[in-house]
Image (cartoon, rainbow, N blue to C red; front, side, top):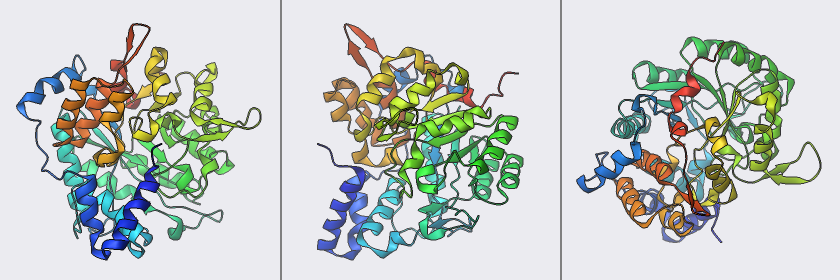
Length: 409
């Protein structure tokens, strides 16, 4: 049985405790990231990469779900919770995320993280675009920010400025709906060029059924901007309320005409069945909504993180096999997570029948030079054979630009 991500961090933290307080960044750098400068794959692997792109229109191949980290060091106004410096486990977790961006104890973390992310993307697909996500703080019922409960804060203005200065970058805003000026902030983000809204309800303490969300849903619908929202269990950022990840709660957004992208296809954990009793897989609740005719054309999912070792079960299998679902799927990397070595086990994917032995080797070679390209290649190479039929993700899944096209009148 595999350990959860947090269990692995706790185990590594225990190692730090035994070996001294200075080891967190070293441990993260050596165990979880093969730190190499961004570069093209070796010659023997380039034919494989060309095959992965196949007949795709590279101009339409976008990464629709990528994070950037901000700690305020370069004037971003960003914030990282002090818990990341107050314990061995916290220091290790921070070092792990920094190491995934090739950064260890770097005072210029913000600048270098962005530079490295964009270098990876430009070596992956210079003809496409990458959508970088802002991330708002936790806000309480009185509309006050709660930094102590916020894992991190990545301001809209900072991400918008990155997009302004880089033609291949797009900006997804994040506005907590409990803010008293939430609608004004959304309008300001739109003026800054936002192409989407991003929420992680479990960690941001957002009940997507709350009436305070309704004005934002309606405005997003008017502007044609999708809401990219986590559903299912959350394991990367600290969770304030796991019930907030229930996919069925997103009907409230859909009923207001908002387009909704369910991150990771809600492929992890269980949630209460609001239509009946008990609980069931969050993925199955998402699929129930996808089958509801009134939401067709407005409900989507992204496949970010679905190849991680803890997400390779029924949800991934069912999603690959059901070709009818692919028209509602969008690709995103959830970067920097693909850069954390242990999260995606190509050997495990091969054992489950998702990767051929040769494709596993080629994917590993890609990982050594570019984790963003690795994430793309693994998903393109995924296969599942059943009754002599080989199932793969359809091309349309990877031409993610269609999500950001103006909605049909």
